[in-house]
Structure formats: C-alpha cells, structure tokens
View 1 (cartoon, helix red, strand yellow):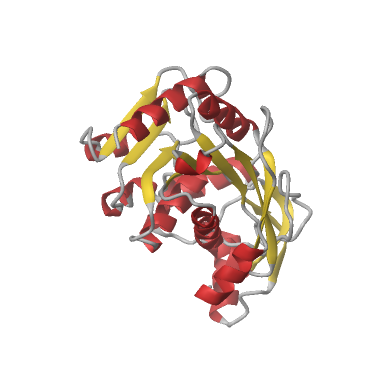
View 2: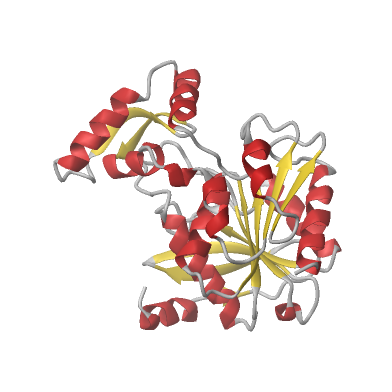
Length: 300
C-alpha cells in the first residue's frame, strides 16, 4: 500500500472502548476489505504498552479458543493485546473459514495485513508492539517482521510455529486425504505456468478442507516447495528479540524443539518448552504461555 492509501485505510478504523473481560471489536479498512480484530486493554493508558499483536493459525480467527485464553491471561498480567482475524480474501470475515467458500487467499497475504494492524496500533499511539503468531501464523509473523526490518517491533513471539519439509508435507497430505499431493500440485503448477493462476481447481482437497475449490495460485502458495515455510530457518534473520514457545506433547509441529534449540542463545533467541502442553496449549497451559511472554517482554 502507498502511504496515502495506508492513511486512508487507517482512517476507516473503528475503535470501540474496551471494558470488562470481553475483548471489543476493531475494524480496519485494508485493500478494499474490512478487517476485524479483538482489542483487550489492561489499563486506560494501554497505548503505553506493552501491547501484543496476535495472529491465529490456519483458516481460524482471532476469537478462537487459544487466542481468547491468551488475551485473558495477558490482561491478568497487565499486558494489552490485539487479536486479529486474517481476511483470507473475504470482506468482514469472522469465525472459522467455511470450506464451501472457494479459496482465493494466499499464505503471504497475511504479511501485509499484519503490517496494516501494526500501523493501526501506531496510529493509536503505541510506540512498540510485540508480534505473536501461533502455528502457521508463526511463519507469517516472521515473514512480516522480515518484510519491515525497521518497524517498531519490541519482540517476536512464535507459539508452536510452522515447520516444514517437502517430504513431511506430502506425507501429511496423503495421510489426511488418502491420495498423493503430487497430482493437484502438478495441475496447479501447470495452470500457473500457462498464465492461468486464477483458474479454479474443483473438487480438490486443500488444507483442512476436503472437496473444495481453490485457485491454482492459492494452492501453490500453500503447497509449492519453499524452505521459507520452515520458520526456524527465518529466525536468524529476525532483528528483534525472539521467543519460541513449544509444547512437549505437540504432535502437529513434531521436531520444532530440535530445530530451534541450536538457535536459542538464551538472550536474543529464547526457547521455552512447556511440559505436557499440546499444540493448542489448552486449559492452564495458556497461563504458562502468558508467563513466558511476560518474562520475555520484561527482559526486553
């Protein structure tokens, strides 16, 4: 976005005063779409920080269980937060993505949307924000930070962030859908090579959606071999302090701890492994996550 269009988008933002224990809605115009977020403030002067900008995982939303639990736990610790809902190409999207809706979004769309919300926080007087991503959005947050190396980011918090290998991706796809990834991937690659990136693949299995519709470019944006899907590879490039939080029982991001541990120096890059926690850090594990975030923000 240009500075002018970004300013115009920010002008469309609607802030509802946050009171009580329920996060209040914020809307932001961006790229012709209305974006949604939940703002949870810990004090009347919340803009002084710390403020955590939170992004959810695949096809989910800012009000999903882990996001709500973390917002409440952070507020209890005096930390304000903004939990955003990625548009995934849809106007005013709220709730889980409906698999019946054709997919036109791309993995990297989140980079600009995270940047737009960071700009909104700046427009509210927030000098620095910590960026948090869970699961897939750990990768999207990392990419957003790398796309804006001079942005006012106090810390990068990656909770069970996406890891990747071509072999594991192919195996996971076949395990989930009982058919190989190679066929739809080759078809999408062919269409894009022919200049038909917006052509729809019909009756295709995609992410968590069986028998759906997806453009060729969208399919490639999530499945084409790309080492930058492997979030630990991006960590050495990130300038702000990084906190990676992993669950010892996470069966979704198996191997995350082994990939991050060599990068963790205990200072710029910290690794916190929460014993007993699975991928979504349910119940009291969200409190452990919030404790780790407070410690990271407190240590700069």
